[in-house]
Length: 198
Image 1 (cartoon, rainbow, N blue to C red):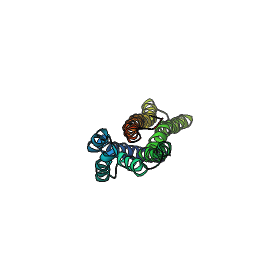
Image 2: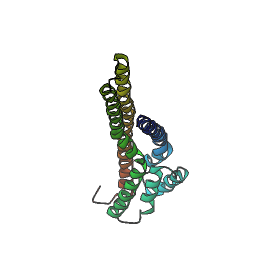
Image 3: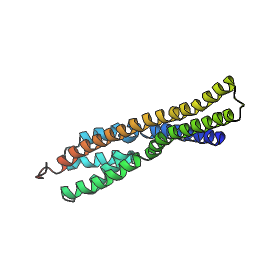
Image 4: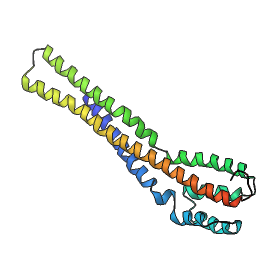
């Protein structure tokens, strides 16, 4: 039983570390909000400037901002409310892609301490089982308690970085979402100067 719990704790540790590193790499600012595209959006005042924005969006086509920008440009012939609705639908999809893997970190945050606790309980059961058979010695008892508590510490040591990673990446996604919304809202306001919803 001890071995199984140690294997599970080891697996959760590896999975957590993998997702923390992968999400940290995938959620870099330059990957989500490429600076050249942001600058082109900021300097797009008329429909004549849209081709420049589209060119930068195509150069950075694998980024969420580029895909959202392309969606907005493709629907410029639509009424503004319809374009905004199409953009919001695409934005939900992009946020969902950015959140990929965060549920794993959230689950590990809850499971790791529980696995550690199970390890502690199993260790204590073994210790008291040994005492019941009269084989107990102070040194063996202390060693058993120490081993049992290490399981709890291991679980917490996995859960804490997972929670930190989950919190940081959730906040980062929220911040990126607000920035994309702000830039694209300004872009659409400039493209629909006569709209009553400006």
